[in-house]
Image (cartoon, rainbow, N blue to C red; front, side):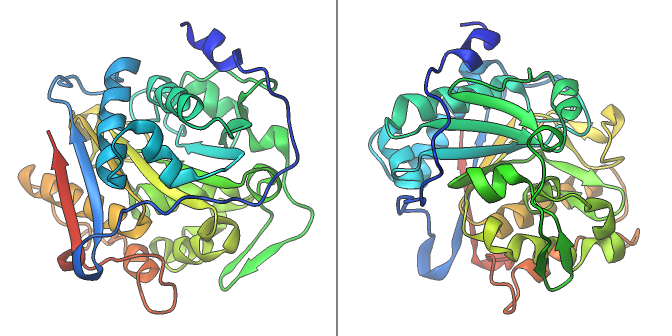
Length: 326
């Protein structure tokens, strides 16, 4: 099915937002630990190449079944999203093609959600702006079951949302429309905050992300994710890392990237970011580069997100189980 037709194929229209009733996926690790799952496809050998939809769907299916312990894919998605009616998908499209979320992966995810969840009324693929989505290869769609548009189209809340260091207007898609959110970051280095994976991807939910890069994003990233609009709605992080970047981000720099061929999944957003940070540091070491701390951009906001004040997840690598699937 062509992507244009797939995105427009749904016939259900907008309905009032319902209170989310997500399932209880069996995602916790042993003895109070968290699990981060990594599916790998060794066929990805070209930096900047996107997966095809079939391969992306197969990787995603393996992860969801393992993550939830479900016997089939539909059962796995029901454990994660329950009777959710409106789910928002937040890709990362700022760098354009190369190290942005790929339409093929997002479309594979949409197909699984539609096939698995009869109660699902609509899916909204949302980003900071329409132009960001277009640069990454997405088409703007404003009617049907699967929608795709930016905050510049949907608008922001009238009132400020306040949380510790954060004072922002929120995307109306997040605040008023979606019952649940699935975070779809990419796997890359960032020239200011060190690492840009899942937690920082929600900078796209507010009107003033430029205000939150001081001190390497610490504690701003953690404070933003602690706001109930994100904390209570974010049910899953799926990080696309077919191409991963260890230096030169956030724009795409092929010379600072490698064809990792990975898709990471976790219900613990802090644990997933912590694993990605470790892998970026490992790749930097292999390439003879200094650590992020040595160049003054250690992503300490990840540790802050896991501290006793925020409790957004686990940042201690000794309490994180990495499960590799192929």
